[in-house]
Amino acid sequence: MRVIGGTAKSIPLASLRGARVRPTLDRVRESLFNQIAGEIEGARLLDLFAGSGAVGIEALSRGAAEVVFVELNSRAQAVIYQNLAKCRFLDTEGEEKKSKNWILLKSNALHALKVLAERHHRFDCVYVDPPYAKDLYEETLTALAHSGLLAESARVIAEHHHKTALQENYDRLVLTKTRQIGDTCLSFFSPASPDSA
Image (cartoon, rainbow, N blue to C red):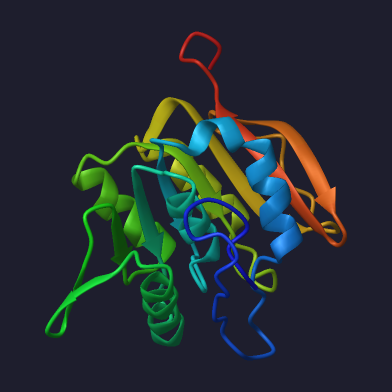
């Protein structure tokens, strides 16, 4: 696994080991960033269920203004820090890990959405990649639709197995397209305008 493009291009990324771990493959990330290439520079991205942090790090490498990683697993959090350090996106002062343009929230996705809403965050792009074995798409995407976190022209991208069918809408989040890469699908959602809701 490596960074595909931008300032950290070709830097290898660590991943978590284990049968339940499924990092976003290079070819899936490449397809994703080809789809949203013109929207990343200067954007604010939320990486829900961040895992190794590969998607958020790819966004930072390509000029995202801010990335928020959300990950509950402590082993995955350690891998995210390791990958941020490899790509020179991590400053350390003693034990404190810090950065000007990224945040790592150690939380489950639903709690993180509430915390970020309370802090008045807004995102241009949200990547949703829950464990395939857990059916978290409906509750996560519905909560996201109601969160107030989405910019007017935001894109929400859900990574899922090709045999998992997602709904055409989750409240005001409307499916605009789905792209299949091997066994993986990327489903793109946009918020409906208030007039059409």
